[in-house]
Length: 526
Image (cartoon, rainbow, N blue to C red):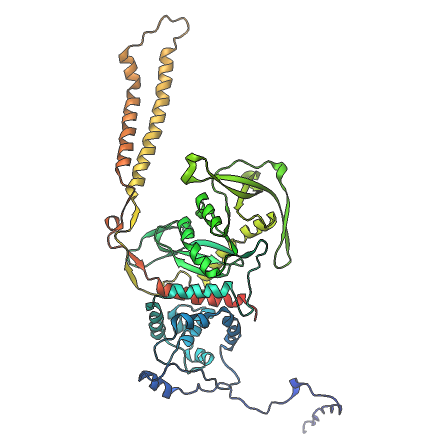
Protein backbone atom coordinates (compact mmCIF):
# COMPACT_ATOMS: atom_id res chain seq x y z
CA UNK A 1 0.00 0.00 0.00
CA UNK A 2 1.49 3.31 -1.01
CA UNK A 3 2.25 5.92 1.65
CA UNK A 4 -0.06 8.91 1.63
CA UNK A 5 1.35 11.98 -0.03
CA UNK A 6 1.85 14.94 2.33
CA UNK A 7 1.30 18.25 0.56
CA UNK A 8 4.06 20.84 0.93
CA UNK A 9 3.20 23.77 3.16
CA UNK A 10 2.20 26.88 1.33
CA UNK A 11 3.93 30.10 2.42
CA UNK A 12 1.54 32.99 2.82
CA UNK A 13 2.11 35.71 0.25
CA UNK A 14 3.36 38.97 1.74
CA UNK A 15 1.16 41.98 1.65
CA UNK A 16 1.70 44.14 -1.40
CA UNK A 17 3.09 47.07 0.59
CA UNK A 18 5.07 44.97 3.05
CA UNK A 19 8.86 45.06 2.85
CA UNK A 20 10.47 41.68 3.19
CA UNK A 21 13.10 41.71 6.00
CA UNK A 22 16.69 41.46 4.85
CA UNK A 23 17.10 38.43 7.09
CA UNK A 24 14.86 36.38 4.83
CA UNK A 25 16.21 37.63 1.54
CA UNK A 26 18.00 34.92 -0.38
CA UNK A 27 21.66 35.60 -1.12
CA UNK A 28 22.37 34.85 -4.71
CA UNK A 29 26.13 35.19 -4.22
CA UNK A 30 27.75 31.85 -3.53
CA UNK A 31 31.05 32.11 -1.61
CA UNK A 32 33.49 29.25 -1.30
CA UNK A 33 33.54 27.96 2.25
CA UNK A 34 37.32 28.06 2.66
CA UNK A 35 39.20 28.92 -0.53
CA UNK A 36 42.92 28.45 -0.90
CA UNK A 37 44.98 31.51 0.05
CA UNK A 38 45.83 33.92 -2.72
CA UNK A 39 49.05 32.76 -4.32
CA UNK A 40 51.96 35.10 -3.55
CA UNK A 41 54.74 33.24 -5.39
CA UNK A 42 55.69 36.21 -7.54
CA UNK A 43 56.05 38.52 -4.54
CA UNK A 44 58.05 35.95 -2.61
CA UNK A 45 60.43 35.59 -5.54
CA UNK A 46 60.81 39.37 -5.68
CA UNK A 47 61.46 39.45 -1.95
CA UNK A 48 64.23 36.86 -2.26
CA UNK A 49 65.79 38.99 -4.99
CA UNK A 50 65.61 42.08 -2.78
CA UNK A 51 63.12 43.83 -5.07
CA UNK A 52 60.10 43.99 -2.74
CA UNK A 53 59.70 46.45 0.13
CA UNK A 54 56.91 44.41 1.74
CA UNK A 55 53.90 42.37 0.69
CA UNK A 56 50.58 44.19 0.82
CA UNK A 57 47.61 42.35 2.38
CA UNK A 58 45.20 40.68 -0.06
CA UNK A 59 41.96 39.15 1.20
CA UNK A 60 39.95 36.52 -0.70
CA UNK A 61 36.16 36.32 -0.18
CA UNK A 62 35.21 33.25 1.85
CA UNK A 63 32.17 31.87 3.58
CA UNK A 64 34.18 30.74 6.61
CA UNK A 65 37.53 32.06 7.86
CA UNK A 66 39.21 30.45 10.87
CA UNK A 67 40.39 32.94 13.52
CA UNK A 68 38.13 35.59 11.97
CA UNK A 69 37.33 36.87 15.47
CA UNK A 70 40.78 38.48 15.53
CA UNK A 71 39.47 41.12 13.14
CA UNK A 72 37.43 42.53 16.03
CA UNK A 73 40.63 43.54 17.81
CA UNK A 74 41.97 45.66 14.95
CA UNK A 75 39.98 48.89 15.62
CA UNK A 76 40.96 48.88 19.28
CA UNK A 77 44.56 48.00 18.41
CA UNK A 78 44.70 50.96 16.05
CA UNK A 79 43.85 53.27 18.93
CA UNK A 80 46.85 52.11 20.92
CA UNK A 81 49.05 53.68 18.26
CA UNK A 82 51.32 50.63 18.01
CA UNK A 83 51.79 50.77 14.24
CA UNK A 84 52.12 54.54 14.07
CA UNK A 85 54.68 54.64 16.87
CA UNK A 86 56.67 51.83 15.29
CA UNK A 87 56.79 53.63 11.94
CA UNK A 88 57.84 56.82 13.69
CA UNK A 89 60.68 55.13 15.58
CA UNK A 90 61.89 52.33 13.29
CA UNK A 91 60.77 53.63 9.90
CA UNK A 92 60.63 50.32 8.06
CA UNK A 93 62.29 46.93 8.03
CA UNK A 94 64.73 46.00 5.25
CA UNK A 95 63.11 44.97 1.99
CA UNK A 96 61.40 41.60 2.24
CA UNK A 97 58.08 39.82 2.10
CA UNK A 98 57.07 40.56 5.70
CA UNK A 99 57.08 44.25 6.53
CA UNK A 100 57.07 46.11 9.84
CA UNK A 101 53.27 46.32 10.11
CA UNK A 102 52.85 42.63 9.31
CA UNK A 103 55.37 41.55 11.95
CA UNK A 104 53.77 43.71 14.64
CA UNK A 105 50.24 42.60 13.78
CA UNK A 106 51.36 38.99 13.79
CA UNK A 107 52.93 39.40 17.23
CA UNK A 108 49.85 41.09 18.70
CA UNK A 109 47.41 38.57 17.25
CA UNK A 110 49.53 35.67 18.50
CA UNK A 111 49.53 37.26 21.97
CA UNK A 112 45.75 37.53 21.86
CA UNK A 113 45.66 33.84 20.93
CA UNK A 114 47.79 33.01 23.97
CA UNK A 115 51.04 32.37 22.10
CA UNK A 116 53.04 35.54 22.63
CA UNK A 117 56.50 33.94 22.31
CA UNK A 118 58.06 33.34 18.90
CA UNK A 119 57.99 29.58 19.54
CA UNK A 120 54.21 29.84 19.83
CA UNK A 121 53.96 30.32 16.06
CA UNK A 122 54.47 26.56 15.71
CA UNK A 123 51.25 25.94 17.64
CA UNK A 124 49.08 28.15 15.40
CA UNK A 125 48.07 27.18 11.88
CA UNK A 126 50.21 29.48 9.74
CA UNK A 127 47.70 29.43 6.86
CA UNK A 128 44.76 30.37 9.10
CA UNK A 129 46.63 33.26 10.73
CA UNK A 130 47.94 34.29 7.31
CA UNK A 131 44.36 34.74 6.04
CA UNK A 132 43.75 37.23 8.88
CA UNK A 133 46.96 39.05 7.96
CA UNK A 134 45.99 39.09 4.28
CA UNK A 135 48.87 36.79 3.29
CA UNK A 136 49.26 33.21 2.17
CA UNK A 137 50.78 32.25 5.54
CA UNK A 138 52.00 33.87 8.75
CA UNK A 139 55.75 34.26 9.42
CA UNK A 140 57.60 31.34 10.96
CA UNK A 141 59.73 31.27 14.11
CA UNK A 142 63.06 31.99 12.43
CA UNK A 143 61.54 34.94 10.54
CA UNK A 144 60.01 36.36 13.72
CA UNK A 145 63.32 36.15 15.56
CA UNK A 146 65.30 37.62 12.68
CA UNK A 147 62.95 40.58 12.20
CA UNK A 148 62.80 41.21 15.95
CA UNK A 149 66.60 41.24 16.12
CA UNK A 150 66.69 43.80 13.30
CA UNK A 151 64.48 46.15 15.33
CA UNK A 152 66.45 45.45 18.52
CA UNK A 153 69.78 46.19 16.82
CA UNK A 154 68.65 49.78 16.26
CA UNK A 155 68.78 50.32 20.04
CA UNK A 156 65.51 52.24 19.90
CA UNK A 157 63.36 49.99 22.11
CA UNK A 158 63.20 52.59 24.90
CA UNK A 159 62.26 55.29 22.38
CA UNK A 160 59.52 52.99 21.05
CA UNK A 161 58.08 52.50 24.54
CA UNK A 162 58.23 56.23 25.20
CA UNK A 163 56.23 56.90 22.03
CA UNK A 164 53.61 54.32 23.10
CA UNK A 165 53.40 55.91 26.55
CA UNK A 166 52.90 59.38 25.04
CA UNK A 167 50.09 58.01 22.90
CA UNK A 168 48.51 56.32 25.93
CA UNK A 169 48.58 59.40 28.17
CA UNK A 170 47.96 61.98 25.42
CA UNK A 171 45.46 60.34 23.04
CA UNK A 172 44.46 62.18 19.89
CA UNK A 173 41.89 59.73 18.56
CA UNK A 174 39.21 59.63 21.19
CA UNK A 175 40.85 56.87 23.17
CA UNK A 176 40.25 56.55 26.87
CA UNK A 177 41.95 59.18 28.98
CA UNK A 178 42.77 59.21 32.65
CA UNK A 179 39.91 60.13 34.95
CA UNK A 180 41.94 62.16 37.41
CA UNK A 181 40.45 65.47 38.36
CA UNK A 182 41.06 68.39 40.65
CA UNK A 183 43.98 70.75 41.01
CA UNK A 184 45.08 70.51 37.38
CA UNK A 185 45.98 66.85 37.86
CA UNK A 186 46.62 65.13 34.53
CA UNK A 187 46.81 61.47 35.49
CA UNK A 188 47.32 58.91 38.21
CA UNK A 189 50.28 56.60 37.68
CA UNK A 190 51.52 53.67 39.73
CA UNK A 191 55.17 52.63 39.82
CA UNK A 192 56.39 49.26 41.01
CA UNK A 193 59.37 46.99 40.55
CA UNK A 194 59.04 43.54 39.04
CA UNK A 195 61.56 40.71 39.37
CA UNK A 196 61.83 38.50 36.27
CA UNK A 197 63.41 35.23 37.38
CA UNK A 198 65.99 33.48 35.20
CA UNK A 199 66.26 29.68 34.95
CA UNK A 200 69.08 29.30 32.41
CA UNK A 201 72.75 28.45 32.77
CA UNK A 202 74.20 31.95 32.43
CA UNK A 203 75.80 33.65 35.44
CA UNK A 204 73.16 36.23 36.36
CA UNK A 205 73.13 38.23 39.59
CA UNK A 206 70.66 37.19 42.27
CA UNK A 207 67.74 39.37 43.36
CA UNK A 208 65.27 38.73 46.18
CA UNK A 209 61.87 37.85 44.71
CA UNK A 210 58.93 38.73 46.94
CA UNK A 211 56.74 36.36 44.92
CA UNK A 212 59.10 33.39 45.23
CA UNK A 213 60.23 34.50 48.74
CA UNK A 214 63.92 33.76 48.17
CA UNK A 215 66.86 35.22 46.19
CA UNK A 216 67.07 33.99 42.61
CA UNK A 217 69.00 34.91 39.44
CA UNK A 218 66.79 37.56 37.92
CA UNK A 219 66.43 40.84 36.07
CA UNK A 220 64.70 43.80 37.71
CA UNK A 221 62.18 45.95 35.85
CA UNK A 222 60.39 49.15 36.81
CA UNK A 223 56.80 49.36 35.53
CA UNK A 224 54.48 52.34 35.21
CA UNK A 225 50.72 51.74 34.99
CA UNK A 226 47.73 54.05 34.74
CA UNK A 227 44.91 54.36 37.27
CA UNK A 228 43.15 51.35 35.74
CA UNK A 229 46.23 49.12 36.06
CA UNK A 230 46.91 49.13 32.31
CA UNK A 231 50.65 49.17 31.52
CA UNK A 232 52.06 52.45 30.24
CA UNK A 233 55.85 52.22 30.38
CA UNK A 234 58.64 49.92 31.53
CA UNK A 235 62.39 50.31 31.96
CA UNK A 236 65.09 47.84 32.89
CA UNK A 237 66.41 48.71 36.33
CA UNK A 238 70.11 48.64 37.05
CA UNK A 239 71.07 45.51 39.01
CA UNK A 240 70.68 46.03 42.73
CA UNK A 241 69.08 49.47 42.40
CA UNK A 242 66.45 50.41 44.99
CA UNK A 243 63.04 51.73 43.97
CA UNK A 244 63.94 55.12 45.49
CA UNK A 245 66.76 55.61 42.99
CA UNK A 246 64.67 54.26 40.11
CA UNK A 247 61.88 56.72 40.89
CA UNK A 248 64.28 59.65 40.95
CA UNK A 249 65.74 58.56 37.61
CA UNK A 250 62.30 57.96 36.09
CA UNK A 251 60.86 61.42 36.79
CA UNK A 252 62.47 63.26 33.81
CA UNK A 253 61.23 60.51 31.47
CA UNK A 254 57.70 60.78 32.85
CA UNK A 255 57.77 64.55 32.44
CA UNK A 256 58.86 64.10 28.82
CA UNK A 257 56.01 61.63 28.24
CA UNK A 258 53.44 63.93 29.83
CA UNK A 259 54.62 66.84 27.72
CA UNK A 260 53.55 69.71 29.99
CA UNK A 261 53.84 70.93 33.57
CA UNK A 262 50.56 69.57 34.88
CA UNK A 263 50.87 67.58 38.08
CA UNK A 264 50.71 63.80 38.11
CA UNK A 265 49.90 61.67 41.14
CA UNK A 266 52.48 58.87 41.45
CA UNK A 267 51.62 55.98 43.75
CA UNK A 268 54.06 53.31 44.96
CA UNK A 269 54.60 50.99 47.92
CA UNK A 270 56.96 51.24 50.90
CA UNK A 271 59.93 50.22 48.76
CA UNK A 272 60.13 53.83 47.60
CA UNK A 273 60.08 55.29 51.12
CA UNK A 274 62.36 58.33 51.34
CA UNK A 275 61.30 61.76 52.66
CA UNK A 276 64.11 63.31 50.61
CA UNK A 277 62.62 61.67 47.48
CA UNK A 278 59.16 62.96 48.41
CA UNK A 279 60.51 66.48 48.63
CA UNK A 280 62.25 66.11 45.27
CA UNK A 281 59.11 64.77 43.58
CA UNK A 282 56.96 67.57 44.98
CA UNK A 283 59.43 70.15 43.69
CA UNK A 284 59.42 68.46 40.26
CA UNK A 285 55.65 68.73 39.86
CA UNK A 286 54.66 65.23 40.96
CA UNK A 287 52.32 64.40 43.82
CA UNK A 288 53.31 61.50 46.07
CA UNK A 289 51.00 58.69 47.18
CA UNK A 290 52.45 55.95 49.37
CA UNK A 291 52.13 54.04 52.62
CA UNK A 292 53.89 55.31 55.73
CA UNK A 293 56.82 53.14 56.71
CA UNK A 294 58.02 52.35 60.23
CA UNK A 295 56.42 52.55 63.63
CA UNK A 296 54.48 55.68 64.49
CA UNK A 297 52.06 56.78 67.16
CA UNK A 298 48.33 56.22 66.74
CA UNK A 299 46.00 59.04 65.77
CA UNK A 300 43.36 59.92 68.44
CA UNK A 301 40.12 58.14 67.62
CA UNK A 302 38.20 61.40 68.03
CA UNK A 303 39.70 62.59 64.72
CA UNK A 304 38.20 59.73 62.69
CA UNK A 305 35.17 60.61 60.56
CA UNK A 306 33.43 59.06 57.57
CA UNK A 307 35.10 59.50 54.17
CA UNK A 308 33.53 58.44 50.87
CA UNK A 309 34.39 58.38 47.18
CA UNK A 310 32.38 57.65 44.03
CA UNK A 311 34.46 55.97 41.32
CA UNK A 312 34.18 56.21 37.54
CA UNK A 313 31.55 53.44 37.53
CA UNK A 314 29.25 55.35 39.88
CA UNK A 315 29.93 53.03 42.81
CA UNK A 316 30.31 54.78 46.17
CA UNK A 317 32.61 53.45 48.87
CA UNK A 318 32.93 54.73 52.43
CA UNK A 319 35.62 54.45 55.11
CA UNK A 320 36.30 55.78 58.60
CA UNK A 321 39.45 57.87 58.34
CA UNK A 322 41.41 60.70 59.94
CA UNK A 323 42.93 63.50 57.84
CA UNK A 324 46.01 65.02 59.54
CA UNK A 325 49.35 66.67 58.77
CA UNK A 326 52.72 65.14 59.69
CA UNK A 327 56.32 66.35 59.56
CA UNK A 328 58.87 63.83 58.28
CA UNK A 329 62.54 64.41 59.17
CA UNK A 330 64.80 64.55 56.13
CA UNK A 331 67.53 61.96 56.60
CA UNK A 332 70.19 64.04 54.86
CA UNK A 333 69.65 67.01 57.21
CA UNK A 334 68.38 65.27 60.35
CA UNK A 335 70.91 67.13 62.54
CA UNK A 336 69.49 70.50 61.49
CA UNK A 337 65.91 69.51 62.30
CA UNK A 338 64.65 70.11 58.74
CA UNK A 339 61.41 68.29 57.98
CA UNK A 340 59.09 67.74 55.03
CA UNK A 341 55.38 68.25 55.66
CA UNK A 342 52.87 65.82 54.15
CA UNK A 343 49.20 65.01 54.39
CA UNK A 344 48.38 61.79 56.24
CA UNK A 345 45.18 59.77 55.86
CA UNK A 346 44.78 57.16 58.63
CA UNK A 347 42.46 54.18 58.84
CA UNK A 348 41.64 51.63 61.55
CA UNK A 349 41.81 48.07 60.21
CA UNK A 350 41.46 44.63 61.84
CA UNK A 351 44.55 42.90 63.22
CA UNK A 352 45.30 39.41 64.45
CA UNK A 353 43.53 38.13 67.53
CA UNK A 354 40.50 40.34 67.03
CA UNK A 355 42.46 43.55 67.73
CA UNK A 356 42.75 46.61 65.51
CA UNK A 357 45.62 48.71 64.23
CA UNK A 358 46.09 51.94 62.32
CA UNK A 359 47.56 52.23 58.82
CA UNK A 360 48.62 55.54 57.30
CA UNK A 361 48.67 56.87 53.74
CA UNK A 362 50.90 59.83 52.90
CA UNK A 363 50.37 62.23 50.00
CA UNK A 364 51.40 65.71 48.89
CA UNK A 365 48.08 66.31 47.13
CA UNK A 366 45.76 68.64 49.05
CA UNK A 367 42.94 68.76 46.48
CA UNK A 368 41.65 65.20 46.63
CA UNK A 369 39.19 64.21 49.31
CA UNK A 370 40.26 61.73 51.98
CA UNK A 371 38.01 59.13 50.40
CA UNK A 372 39.64 59.52 47.00
CA UNK A 373 43.12 59.25 48.54
CA UNK A 374 42.15 55.92 50.11
CA UNK A 375 40.58 54.75 46.86
CA UNK A 376 43.64 55.70 44.79
CA UNK A 377 46.00 53.96 47.19
CA UNK A 378 43.90 50.80 47.14
CA UNK A 379 43.79 50.87 43.35
CA UNK A 380 47.53 50.31 43.24
CA UNK A 381 46.77 46.58 43.40
CA UNK A 382 45.43 46.81 39.85
CA UNK A 383 49.05 46.92 38.74
CA UNK A 384 49.74 43.67 40.61
CA UNK A 385 46.72 42.18 38.85
CA UNK A 386 48.29 43.02 35.49
CA UNK A 387 51.51 41.23 36.49
CA UNK A 388 49.50 38.16 37.46
CA UNK A 389 47.44 38.21 34.25
CA UNK A 390 50.46 38.84 32.03
CA UNK A 391 52.40 35.98 33.60
CA UNK A 392 49.57 33.57 32.77
CA UNK A 393 48.55 34.84 29.31
CA UNK A 394 51.42 36.93 27.89
CA UNK A 395 54.53 35.12 29.20
CA UNK A 396 55.56 38.22 31.12
CA UNK A 397 58.64 36.53 32.60
CA UNK A 398 59.82 34.81 29.41
CA UNK A 399 63.22 35.89 28.11
CA UNK A 400 62.37 35.97 24.37
CA UNK A 401 66.06 35.91 23.50
CA UNK A 402 69.12 33.95 24.51
CA UNK A 403 71.43 36.93 24.16
CA UNK A 404 73.43 38.39 27.03
CA UNK A 405 76.33 40.76 27.60
CA UNK A 406 79.05 40.98 30.22
CA UNK A 407 78.19 43.06 33.25
CA UNK A 408 80.38 46.04 34.06
CA UNK A 409 83.24 44.64 36.20
CA UNK A 410 83.94 48.11 37.61
CA UNK A 411 80.37 48.58 38.84
CA UNK A 412 80.31 49.16 42.61
CA UNK A 413 78.23 46.61 44.50
CA UNK A 414 77.62 45.97 48.22
CA UNK A 415 80.25 43.79 49.88
CA UNK A 416 78.52 40.73 51.41
CA UNK A 417 81.42 40.31 53.84
CA UNK A 418 80.41 43.62 55.42
CA UNK A 419 76.97 42.23 56.24
CA UNK A 420 78.40 39.03 57.69
CA UNK A 421 80.85 41.03 59.81
CA UNK A 422 77.99 43.13 61.15
CA UNK A 423 76.21 39.95 62.21
CA UNK A 424 79.27 39.12 64.30
CA UNK A 425 79.10 42.60 65.84
CA UNK A 426 75.45 42.09 66.79
CA UNK A 427 76.23 38.68 68.30
CA UNK A 428 79.17 40.08 70.31
CA UNK A 429 77.06 43.06 71.42
CA UNK A 430 74.23 40.83 72.64
CA UNK A 431 76.72 38.60 74.49
CA UNK A 432 78.31 41.66 76.10
CA UNK A 433 74.93 42.91 77.34
CA UNK A 434 74.16 39.47 78.80
CA UNK A 435 77.52 39.19 80.56
CA UNK A 436 77.26 42.78 81.85
CA UNK A 437 73.88 41.97 83.42
CA UNK A 438 75.27 38.84 85.07
CA UNK A 439 78.32 40.76 86.34
CA UNK A 440 76.15 43.51 87.85
CA UNK A 441 74.03 40.89 89.58
CA UNK A 442 77.14 39.13 90.96
CA UNK A 443 78.66 42.40 92.22
CA UNK A 444 75.38 43.35 93.88
CA UNK A 445 75.18 39.97 95.61
CA UNK A 446 78.78 40.25 96.83
CA UNK A 447 78.24 43.77 98.22
CA UNK A 448 75.00 42.83 99.96
CA UNK A 449 75.75 41.06 103.30
CA UNK A 450 73.42 38.49 104.71
CA UNK A 451 71.30 39.42 107.73
CA UNK A 452 73.43 39.39 110.89
CA UNK A 453 76.71 39.14 108.99
CA UNK A 454 79.61 41.39 109.81
CA UNK A 455 81.68 43.59 107.52
CA UNK A 456 82.42 42.41 103.99
CA UNK A 457 85.91 42.66 102.59
CA UNK A 458 86.18 42.72 98.76
CA UNK A 459 89.67 42.23 97.42
CA UNK A 460 91.00 43.13 94.01
CA UNK A 461 91.32 39.47 93.19
CA UNK A 462 87.62 38.90 93.99
CA UNK A 463 86.65 41.94 91.92
CA UNK A 464 88.74 40.83 88.96
CA UNK A 465 87.38 37.30 89.13
CA UNK A 466 83.80 38.53 88.88
CA UNK A 467 84.58 40.99 86.07
CA UNK A 468 86.79 38.64 84.05
CA UNK A 469 83.95 37.40 81.79
CA UNK A 470 82.93 41.04 81.18
CA UNK A 471 86.48 42.00 80.21
CA UNK A 472 86.56 39.09 77.76
CA UNK A 473 83.18 40.08 76.27
CA UNK A 474 84.33 43.68 75.86
CA UNK A 475 87.50 42.57 74.09
CA UNK A 476 85.47 40.32 71.77
CA UNK A 477 83.08 43.18 70.96
CA UNK A 478 85.92 45.61 70.28
CA UNK A 479 87.59 43.08 67.96
CA UNK A 480 84.32 42.46 66.07
CA UNK A 481 83.68 46.20 65.63
CA UNK A 482 87.27 46.78 64.45
CA UNK A 483 86.96 43.94 61.92
CA UNK A 484 83.67 45.37 60.68
CA UNK A 485 85.17 48.84 60.20
CA UNK A 486 88.12 47.42 58.28
CA UNK A 487 85.94 45.73 55.65
CA UNK A 488 84.98 48.02 52.72
CA UNK A 489 81.25 48.50 52.29
CA UNK A 490 81.40 48.23 48.48
CA UNK A 491 83.69 46.53 45.99
CA UNK A 492 83.96 46.34 42.21
CA UNK A 493 81.76 43.63 40.76
CA UNK A 494 84.76 41.99 39.09
CA UNK A 495 86.26 41.12 42.48
CA UNK A 496 83.12 39.55 43.88
CA UNK A 497 81.55 37.88 40.83
CA UNK A 498 83.92 37.75 37.86
CA UNK A 499 82.22 36.85 34.60
CA UNK A 500 78.73 37.91 35.69
CA UNK A 501 76.38 38.69 32.80
CA UNK A 502 73.20 40.65 32.17
CA UNK A 503 70.41 39.53 29.86
CA UNK A 504 69.65 41.34 26.62
CA UNK A 505 67.27 44.25 27.20
CA UNK A 506 66.37 45.51 23.71
CA UNK A 507 64.44 42.44 22.58
CA UNK A 508 62.66 42.18 25.93
CA UNK A 509 61.59 45.83 25.84
CA UNK A 510 60.25 45.36 22.30
CA UNK A 511 58.19 42.34 23.29
CA UNK A 512 56.96 44.20 26.38
CA UNK A 513 55.71 47.02 24.14
CA UNK A 514 53.90 44.62 21.81
CA UNK A 515 52.23 42.74 24.65
CA UNK A 516 51.28 45.97 26.38
CA UNK A 517 49.51 47.01 23.18
CA UNK A 518 47.77 43.63 23.04
CA UNK A 519 46.58 44.03 26.62
CA UNK A 520 45.45 47.62 26.08
CA UNK A 521 43.26 46.70 23.12
CA UNK A 522 40.64 45.80 25.72
CA UNK A 523 41.03 49.18 27.42
CA UNK A 524 39.89 51.29 24.48
CA UNK A 525 36.29 51.59 23.31
CA UNK A 526 35.71 50.53 19.72
